Image 1 (cartoon, rainbow, N blue to C red):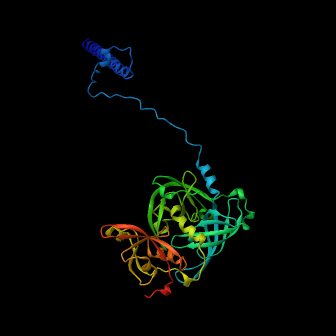
Image 2 (image 1 turned 90 degrees about the horizontal axis):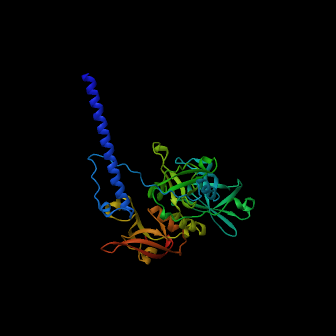
Image 3 (image 1 turned 180 degrees about the vertical axis):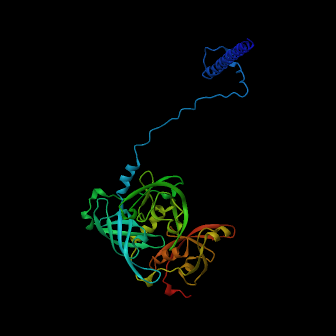
Length: 403
């Protein structure tokens, strides 16, 4: 009997506690409702209710409330497929029969596979941009257009330091190509590219035909060392494979922001997702120069008359100098001396084309014929700070300089 009595008392206690908790919760809910109604400016509530202080919550209690609903808007009717269809019309495949000499002096022959971007056209010629390393040493270059038609192209100009080249195809040769199958590429301002931006790489990967890979911008203004000097590049994790070189890196508007150029591989087998593209805004001045370049004898190549050294990353960080080409001295009577270039100046660009090392500066200057006026931007120390100034220089020939 004592056991039954104890059980009965326990059940009564539980019942009473449950009822008390229920009424307390109802009380709190009613208090909360009055505050909520006050927030809505409900005119039917009395002034006492409207100014009443809510009853404090029991210590340790938790309020659960719904999160605000998310306003979801519809995306524009644009998909990766649509962008690709639009952009691929300006990307071509390139196959070049090349002859090169290896480190041991042996002559090697083979086929270089790459990609190109239809850059411009006029009444007589179609111009295609690609990488220098795609067509370096080429004896014959074949371009395959989106409709599958093969056309022979000629090299208009090539720049090893910038890893860029221009191909040209005559209007007569283009007659067999479906005019509706290709288009001139739409270019973006690559200086506005941001880290984290989605990008799409287009190109003739491994020679299998044009392919598409998607990724993001990992870094901008990345300085990368190549065999021909340093380049300032866009880094992306969109897969860039052999054959993609010279193809387009586009944004989500279908605009070209870069020219696919290289990736870390081979000895870096543990590294993935590090591909690089030449920013299109950086490439255009070089491509325009190549397009308009006139051939001339080597002995008539432009000459500055300066003794120079590369401002490396370590030197730049140590002295607070910008990356560029340091002028250690100036040859008397040379083009640089006549223009007012001074020892201690750091040359930053030639006709708007950035130079990071001595090789790039020499390549830029010698691409012009003696007698041509170019514009150099230099960083000069005025005693308090370094300032950038533009200096017009009329190039001479090397033979005229007394060294």
